[in-house]
Image (cartoon, helix red, strand yellow):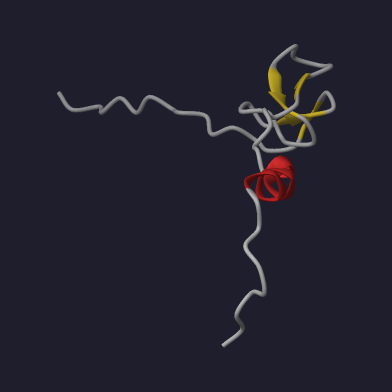
Length: 67
């Protein structure tokens, strides 16, 4: 098993970890619907760059003809 030769200082450790922080997701406004969504992702309504990519399910009310 490898053993380090000398202890890394707090400064060196901090500098190494300086790029590990998480950044906020970049948001974009859809051209067609005006919705806010993550960049390069489909909006919740299924639109991407103003075009409907994913068709939404249409719920049909089924009325029973009992009587």
